[in-house]
Amino acid sequence: MKIYNSEKVEIFDTNDNRTGTDLDSIDLSRCDLRGAVLEGANFSDAKLSGTNLQASDLYWAILFRADLSEADLREAILCGADLKEANLEGADLRNANLGRDNLNGSTQLQGARLAQAQLSGATLTGAEYDETTIFPDGFDPDVAGMVKAAA
View (spheres, rainbow, N blue to C red):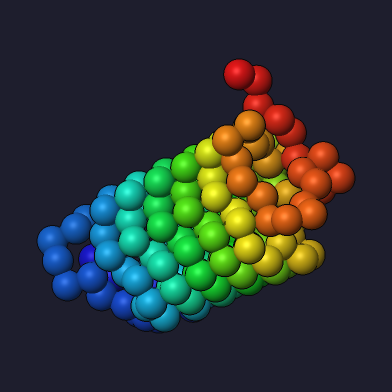
């Protein structure tokens, strides 16, 4: 499967027989995917540790249980993404958009691990979390406009 940026220039080839947007369980650790257009892609259980996804479009992406530790997600669009149980420890989310999608749906962060993540300037209004979500020290999800999901 080929991955393209917003100018429709190929930036990566998975060199396998994947089709569509199914990247379930793929290992793209430490790859340079800056500016990638991956709207709605399925990255469930994917290994994206240390991957550069700066300014990438991950709108409605499924990142359930994905390892995004130390990933560069600065200025990425993650509106409506499923980040439940994702490992975002040490990820750089500065100026990323994790706010509501165009249908007013929430980005899902239930059970996500955000310890030591950089959240400065990130849009988190309406993003959902729960009692198992781990935030960086001193971070207040209510001040950020996040919503605690019903149990």
